[in-house]
Image (cartoon, rainbow, N blue to C red; front, side, top):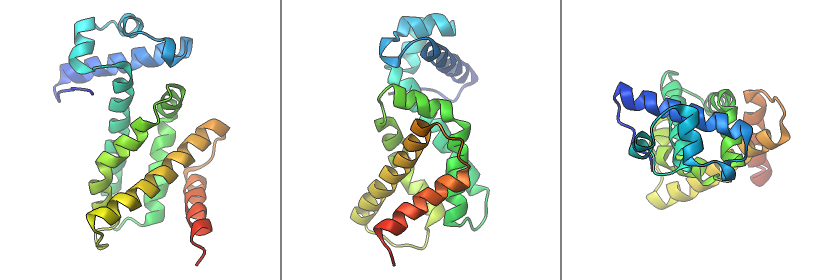
Length: 183
């Protein structure tokens, strides 16, 4: 878990730690990186690391949460956002953070994407489908389906190493849904 306070000092230290981790990941696999490696690369003290993060995967979780917050903020800026626009914006934002996606995949911590997405379900539901009434159970199952699809599209995009446009990724997502439900 991460424990980043909203003050400038904590934010700055967290950014240095993230940069240090990403630097280390360019030199060796995630599984071989130690907190000492990140500490040295980031110039942040060990006590500061542990004040902000419990473990190295928590650094990736923190960055993942920041990306989702950015997606939500961008979606709130667009009045009457359509599903297609929301999907394009989602994939466009992740394309800006493709290194984080690669880091998550390289670290074998895809659960970070699932977990962060789950945290943002209430906000995303409010933005994207405020007039659809679903029970808590229906929301849970629908969210699970969407999360799995989105994570699959993102990880396939990274694995294939193709510079697809956000519209293409959104199209793949919509096409997958059409294949499942050909009405």
